[in-house]
Image (cartoon, rainbow, N blue to C red; front, side, top):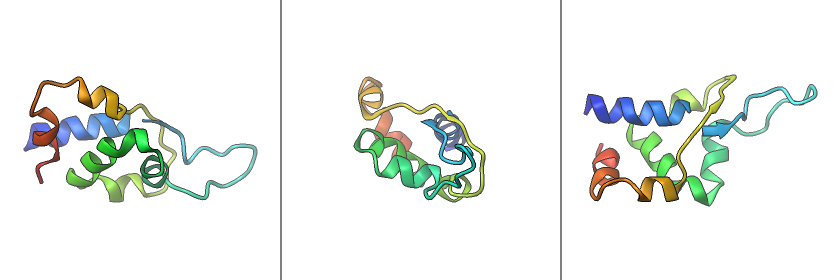
Length: 88
């Protein structure tokens, strides 16, 4: 379970969404988790973040720069890997 959480944490810390960045003085209206949840290509990542208990941390005040795998990237993992990652 510790390895699963570490993998999810690494993926979550790495999603190319900079929701908390200050773009020209404007404050963001959504956090990283909300932005990822609104993008269909990141549904597996969002499920993994929630399963790993990281949604609260990534919903907090940033800034965050995250590079994350898309659903297509998760699909290329060996069979059963995603299911194991999503086990709570």
